[in-house]
Amino acid sequence: MRLSMCLFIICLCFAFVQNAEASGKKSETTAVVLSVLLPGAGHIYTNETATGLLFMGVYTSAVAIAFAVGPQAFEKDQPSSGQFDDLADNSSKNTNKGIVYGCIAVAAGTMIWSAFDAAASARRFNRASFGFAPWLNPDKRSVGATLCLRLP
Image (cartoon, rainbow, N blue to C red):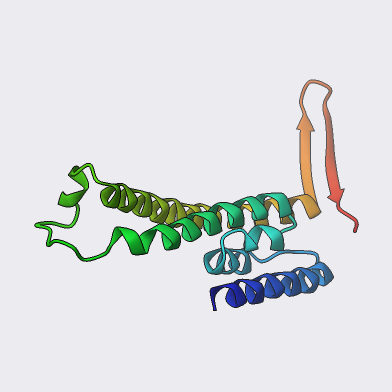
Protein backbone atom coordinates (compact mmCIF):
# COMPACT_ATOMS: atom_id res chain seq x y z
CA MET A 1 0.00 0.00 0.00
CA ARG A 2 2.73 2.45 0.99
CA LEU A 3 4.85 1.54 -2.04
CA SER A 4 1.93 2.04 -4.45
CA MET A 5 1.21 5.42 -2.84
CA CYS A 6 4.87 6.45 -3.25
CA LEU A 7 4.87 5.38 -6.91
CA PHE A 8 1.65 7.32 -7.49
CA ILE A 9 3.16 10.46 -5.95
CA ILE A 10 6.31 10.11 -8.05
CA CYS A 11 4.21 9.74 -11.23
CA LEU A 12 2.14 12.76 -10.17
CA CYS A 13 5.34 14.71 -9.61
CA PHE A 14 6.60 13.98 -13.11
CA ALA A 15 3.20 14.93 -14.55
CA PHE A 16 3.44 18.29 -12.75
CA VAL A 17 6.97 18.73 -14.13
CA GLN A 18 5.77 18.29 -17.69
CA ASN A 19 2.79 20.59 -17.10
CA ALA A 20 4.97 23.31 -15.55
CA GLU A 21 7.48 23.15 -18.39
CA ALA A 22 4.79 24.50 -20.69
CA SER A 23 4.30 27.61 -18.52
CA GLY A 24 7.97 28.03 -17.60
CA LYS A 25 7.30 28.71 -13.90
CA LYS A 26 6.99 26.34 -10.96
CA SER A 27 4.38 26.79 -8.26
CA GLU A 28 5.63 27.02 -4.67
CA THR A 29 2.34 25.56 -3.41
CA THR A 30 2.62 22.52 -5.67
CA ALA A 31 6.22 21.96 -4.59
CA VAL A 32 5.28 22.12 -0.89
CA VAL A 33 2.27 19.82 -1.28
CA LEU A 34 4.35 17.26 -3.16
CA SER A 35 7.06 17.42 -0.50
CA VAL A 36 4.55 16.94 2.31
CA LEU A 37 3.11 13.89 0.54
CA LEU A 38 6.57 12.45 -0.15
CA PRO A 39 9.68 14.35 0.94
CA GLY A 40 11.81 15.12 -2.09
CA ALA A 41 8.99 15.08 -4.65
CA GLY A 42 8.81 18.88 -4.61
CA HIS A 43 12.49 19.09 -5.44
CA ILE A 44 12.07 16.72 -8.36
CA TYR A 45 9.20 18.94 -9.50
CA THR A 46 11.54 21.96 -9.49
CA ASN A 47 14.24 20.03 -11.40
CA GLU A 48 16.53 19.53 -8.38
CA THR A 49 16.52 15.77 -8.82
CA ALA A 50 19.62 14.95 -6.77
CA THR A 51 18.32 16.84 -3.74
CA GLY A 52 14.89 15.25 -4.15
CA LEU A 53 16.33 11.75 -4.29
CA LEU A 54 18.44 12.49 -1.22
CA PHE A 55 15.37 13.61 0.77
CA MET A 56 13.41 10.56 -0.45
CA GLY A 57 16.25 8.24 0.52
CA VAL A 58 16.65 9.64 4.03
CA TYR A 59 12.88 9.65 4.66
CA THR A 60 12.19 6.16 3.33
CA SER A 61 15.23 4.74 5.13
CA ALA A 62 14.10 6.21 8.45
CA VAL A 63 10.54 4.95 7.98
CA ALA A 64 11.75 1.49 6.90
CA ILE A 65 14.04 1.15 9.93
CA ALA A 66 11.25 2.31 12.25
CA PHE A 67 8.86 -0.28 10.80
CA ALA A 68 11.50 -3.02 10.90
CA VAL A 69 12.55 -2.42 14.51
CA GLY A 70 9.22 -1.20 15.88
CA PRO A 71 7.34 -4.50 16.43
CA GLN A 72 10.09 -5.94 18.66
CA ALA A 73 10.46 -2.71 20.61
CA PHE A 74 6.83 -2.34 21.62
CA GLU A 75 5.83 -5.86 22.64
CA LYS A 76 3.80 -5.83 25.86
CA ASP A 77 5.87 -7.65 28.51
CA GLN A 78 5.67 -5.41 31.52
CA PRO A 79 3.74 -2.26 32.37
CA SER A 80 5.74 0.93 32.50
CA SER A 81 5.12 3.86 34.81
CA GLY A 82 5.61 6.52 32.14
CA GLN A 83 6.00 6.91 28.43
CA PHE A 84 9.81 7.20 28.38
CA ASP A 85 10.69 5.76 31.82
CA ASP A 86 11.55 2.34 30.47
CA LEU A 87 14.28 3.76 28.20
CA ALA A 88 16.54 4.06 31.25
CA ASP A 89 16.93 0.27 31.41
CA ASN A 90 19.78 -1.30 29.49
CA SER A 91 17.91 -3.94 27.53
CA SER A 92 17.87 -4.50 23.79
CA LYS A 93 14.13 -3.79 23.70
CA ASN A 94 14.75 -0.32 25.12
CA THR A 95 17.57 0.24 22.67
CA ASN A 96 15.14 -0.62 19.90
CA LYS A 97 12.67 1.93 21.28
CA GLY A 98 15.39 4.58 21.12
CA ILE A 99 16.10 3.62 17.51
CA VAL A 100 12.40 3.87 16.63
CA TYR A 101 12.00 7.26 18.34
CA GLY A 102 15.14 8.51 16.59
CA CYS A 103 13.90 7.30 13.19
CA ILE A 104 10.55 8.99 13.73
CA ALA A 105 12.35 12.23 14.59
CA VAL A 106 14.55 11.96 11.48
CA ALA A 107 11.53 11.24 9.25
CA ALA A 108 9.54 14.16 10.69
CA GLY A 109 12.51 16.52 10.41
CA THR A 110 13.15 15.42 6.83
CA MET A 111 9.51 16.03 5.92
CA ILE A 112 9.48 19.53 7.45
CA TRP A 113 12.86 20.49 5.99
CA SER A 114 11.88 19.16 2.57
CA ALA A 115 8.64 21.16 2.56
CA PHE A 116 10.36 24.44 3.45
CA ASP A 117 13.22 23.83 1.05
CA ALA A 118 10.82 22.88 -1.77
CA ALA A 119 9.27 26.35 -1.61
CA ALA A 120 12.74 27.89 -1.75
CA SER A 121 13.62 25.57 -4.61
CA ALA A 122 10.60 26.78 -6.60
CA ARG A 123 11.64 30.38 -5.94
CA ARG A 124 15.20 29.61 -7.10
CA PHE A 125 13.85 27.96 -10.25
CA ASN A 126 11.56 30.88 -11.07
CA ARG A 127 14.27 33.44 -10.39
CA ALA A 128 16.73 31.54 -12.61
CA SER A 129 14.28 31.09 -15.48
CA PHE A 130 13.55 34.79 -15.90
CA GLY A 131 15.11 37.78 -14.30
CA PHE A 132 15.32 41.50 -14.87
CA ALA A 133 17.62 43.53 -12.68
CA PRO A 134 18.32 47.22 -13.24
CA TRP A 135 21.65 48.47 -11.91
CA LEU A 136 23.36 51.78 -11.32
CA ASN A 137 27.11 52.29 -11.27
CA PRO A 138 27.80 55.67 -9.61
CA ASP A 139 31.58 55.53 -10.17
CA LYS A 140 31.32 55.35 -13.95
CA ARG A 141 28.03 57.25 -14.02
CA SER A 142 26.23 54.55 -15.94
CA VAL A 143 22.88 52.82 -15.77
CA GLY A 144 22.00 49.44 -17.18
CA ALA A 145 19.86 46.38 -16.88
CA THR A 146 20.47 42.68 -16.83
CA LEU A 147 18.02 40.33 -18.49
CA CYS A 148 18.26 36.62 -17.76
CA LEU A 149 16.31 34.07 -19.80
CA ARG A 150 16.64 30.33 -19.33
CA LEU A 151 15.87 28.49 -22.51
CA PRO A 152 14.88 24.80 -22.50
